[in-house]
Image (cartoon, rainbow, N blue to C red; front, top):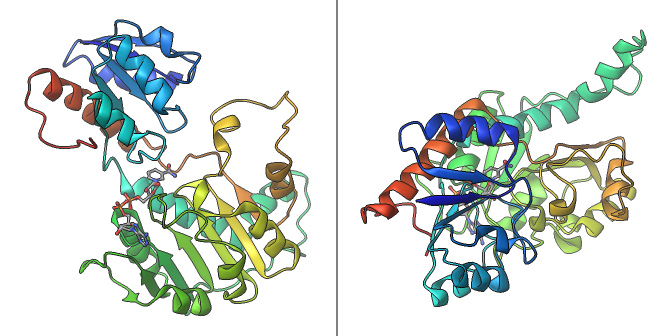
Amino acid sequence: MKIAFFSAKKYDIDFFDFANKKYEFEIKYFETRLNEKTTILAKNFDVVCAFVNDNLNSEVLKNLKENGTKLIALRSAGFNHVDLDSAKKLGLRVVHVPKYSPYAVAEHTVALILSLNRKIHKAYFRVKENNFSLDGLLGFDLYGKTVGLIGTGKIGRIVANILKGFGMNILGYDKYPNNEFSGKYVNLDTLLKKSDIISLHTPLNKETYHIINKENIRKMKNGVMIINTSRGGLIDTKAVIEGLKSKKIGYLGLDVYEEEENIFFEDLSSEIIDDDTFVRLTSFPNVLITGHQGFFTCEALTNIAETTLENIYNYKNNTLNKNIVV
Ligand code: NAI
């Protein structure tokens, strides 16, 4: 099996080469993202391995099919970047890694909450400059406060368990409630109204697109903290910026951003960022952004590499019976 591996970073190559010792597949790593212009690189490869910001729209899929691709092996849980209807019509099999480390993302979510609340990102730079003033670093006890989790799947439930340990009241809203959720289910309006912290853990789909919008922000507590480690499209960024300006939103922690595909995963420190909305977000003192690193732990990268290669192995041997998207 020949694998064309897009958006390859050094850490991907390290973890995949290690896991591939078991399979010895031929993997060609391409640093570039997959899009209409780069599909040609995958010519005559059986498998295309793609990540979250690769673009698998209908045109890309059509080109891949014509060039001999049979399997799209996503090394992500989410598949909102794939035109699944087109893949189905073209007879392209798509597999993913449904669970690699929900702990990684859940722990990063809590890291954002704690850092924003106690202003660790500011304290770090102050102390480096021998500025030991506490002005502006005032936080609040998490104990006794209410967190609302929108989405109580694998990640949301772990966040609930961790924050329970802090003595928080846990509310949850989910289209498909789960018995293992350790908090209390309420409807979305109640969650928006009662939560001091709101954290997003649903996939991005037609129903969840811009679930944090002007109307829903209006229902929230003054000074609410919003955390998004799921997908950028869950938040209407312009509405959130208005909420920050009016001080309705007191804190914003993001690991994902709607237009992140043009920004994240690259070193742009010498470039001019021409996304004015993103630059406006970074200008707020109460906004903390990380560049889609929730998944980035040793355990998660090991699981991603092992599961992706196992998916490909099972496909090759006609034993694929799990992790199928279409
Ligand atoms: P999951 O599939 O276990 O849970 C998602 C939950 O959302 C389910 O309980 C489902 O019922 C609920 N849901 C679906 N549609 C809904 C709707 N319309 N309204 C309310 N609830 C709805 O997924 P998991 O593993 O917990 O991941 C959650 C999200 O985290 C993923 O979809 C992905 O976008 C994101 N993620 C982010 C990573 C990062 O590095 N920042 C890494 C991995 C995942």
